[in-house]
Image (cartoon, rainbow, N blue to C red; front, side):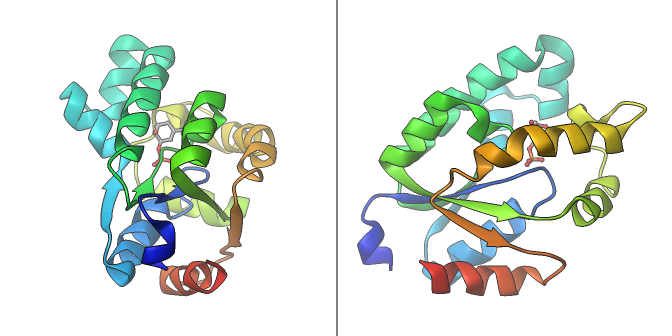
Length: 171
Ligand code: S3P
C-alpha cells in the first residue's frame, strides 16, 4: 500500500469531532508513515491557537493560512494528514489534495459528533448559544462536499481501530 501511494499522502477530511486526528495517528502508525495535523501546523506557524487566530484575525484569515499550510504539507508526502473540518470546502485545497493525495471522508452521524465536541471547548465555530443548530447547518452545507472525497468511511459509534481497519481494507 505504501509503495502504491508513492509520494501521495492519505488526507482525512470530515466534520469536527469525526476522529481525523485519532484515526490518523493510528493509521499512520499501522502504515509506518508520519502523521501530521494541519491545525497543529497552522498553530505552530502562527504561534497562536486556532481559537486565537479566529478571535484576533477572523475566519477569512485563518482559511487563507490553512490553504497555504495544507499545500505545503502535501508537498512533503507521503504522510497521513488530518485536515481541519472546513479545509475541504476550499476548491483550491481540494485540487491540491487530488493532485498530491488520496482523500478519505470520515463520515459520522450528528449525535456521535455532538457527544465528542461537547467534551472540548476548542472549536471557535461552536462557541455560540446554539452549537447544535450550528452543527446541523455545517453538516448539511458540508456533507455534499465531503462526499467528493475519493473514499468514504462511515464510523457510527465504532471504535477508532475499526475505522482504521476499514480504511486499510478499502485502500
Ligand atoms: C473548523 C474545524 C477545526 C478548526 C477550526 C475550524 C471547521 O478543526 O480547523 O476550528 O471549520 O470545521 P477540527 O475539524 O480538527 O476540529
